[in-house]
Length: 285
Length: 93
Image (cartoon, chains in turn green, cyan):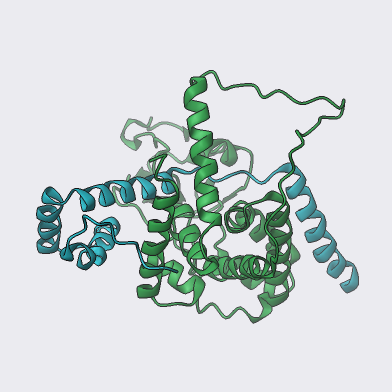
């Protein structure tokens, strides 16, 4: 969570002897505090720490990992401990809301909290779309597979037993949905030769990015297209491994869990898949 | 899938090194095996080219930026999601 997000809300003020702050927040040094009057520590949190006179603060060097439950943790926040705070002192502490883990969201969704499921969709929409797009090679099929994957996830979420990460479970659904669609394809894809038209019926012109030369932009585009074409040419089982491992960046173990195959099988398919891609891209690499 | 075609200039050791090349690309090879591979590629042009081009394939794949979900696709997805979750909410209330 960035500074802007913190300042826009999501923090509650409460009395307690610890302040959780980000490691890079630049906490003011307590030793420079004025002893007279309540000390105000300007905070990027958009809140203030009011500290009574005489109270001592310690700035710990250690960072406490705030790991709430299992599953993904987005960041770790340090903890500042105030010592010798007089009893009854008025202490207001800004505490950033910890990110909710996937597992917690799944538990909430399993109890019928629809907002929790929607948050999971928000987190993984892009990743799942990329898996489907790489597996299927076009936007239309990827769009349908994306919807299908999340609908299946919604339907089967009550059966999720936390034996794996939520994301490997979700990626497995997305991969299986894509593989099913691939196997159903009986005919090669038809490619339209028509240029896309805009609302005015004219061929839209692309605006080049000035940061790159036209040659470089063209080279990158050709590479992108050739790579996707090479991936499209892989057998479905090999394609799934290459997409998850090399294009989505999962580890061999994660791919193994996602596809429910051994790590040795992942490595074998990956190597064969890379060899095929190499052959198909020989002129471009 | 068909086995990798064996080029005419490929020596007997090359195919045995296939698994080692795969390990090398994953950074999992042992030091002795790595040395063995390095010795081989200095004398075998075919394997040197194979390793070089496979490293490029991996590089290109990993550098490939993920695409954003197109607006139309995003909107269609959320229409379906909200119909599903909203439908359940309405049923419960």
